[in-house]
Image (cartoon, rainbow, N blue to C red; front, top):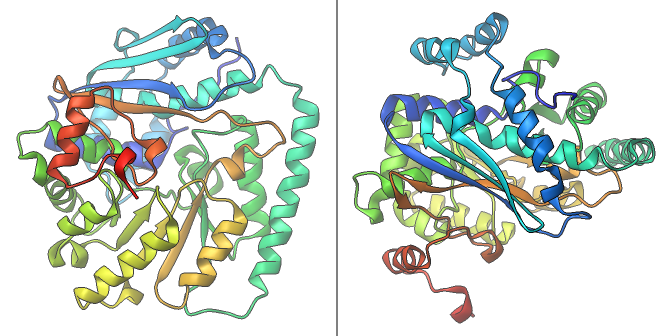
Length: 400
């Protein structure tokens, strides 16, 4: 067996930033994460169950190396007690199960959240790489390199356009959907070498360390969703999550995610206090132009200069979409573009749309009411209905 994961840094930065906040603020939370494939793969993912189990066995043998801990400790927002926790941390195989149901691959992680949250990105990277190992790598990589070069040329041509108020900056967000770990490193290295003026970092902590890049990331949906099951009124869960983040990071990591219950409900909670304290917002579902206009309108309503804030786009982006969004907004606010699958799995094969999402915390269901209905994920229709009622969100079937 060739291990897919050889370093516990081979994951997204926001896993560490959320992990630290969870450890400090709610260390006893119990959580459940479930794997889902949203599209139809070329062959049943159930065929990978045995190999996935072997990879998870290997993952659970890994520990953080001393130089990896030193790197994390050098990030100013990482606290010493969290580094001490990571020093003794090891994934527990008993907290994650792999099974099948017909052609469906089922993976469930269940246990203390501070012990199971880290499984998510590793599971997705493992399933992806095992899946694509069954295809002929040589023509895929040849096509990938051709497309990579086309992206590089496209960015250079785009960079020659007349300058705008704020620069074009993009990042690699492609760990979870990558063709392979080796391919992600090749792609990121090429962008660093050829496009340093525009390519500003990666979410992959291992690659950031190895290539001396800026690690990028703040929070994901699971962080805010967990607060739906904490001892706060459901209508206040977003404010509670944002407040805990402010207290944990004191001005660092200031990009807030907006689409756990939709942009309108988020902005209703994102008052002047939070709007001043957070550096900007991240888009991950719904129409990006509509979302950006709502964000700018909100800042204007609060009399905040949008030029001091940043909008980060990260929803299924490709280069042409990033260029179009930049042209639309670049004279009005700072921007950033986190691009995933289009960077690390654009090799001529159809990517699998896989996620591993938080489904319950402390024995209660949690949910994301995405601005893109296909991204809504919850096993409990009663809780979904309640969440929609609390935040005055119409179910998809009656939306106009």
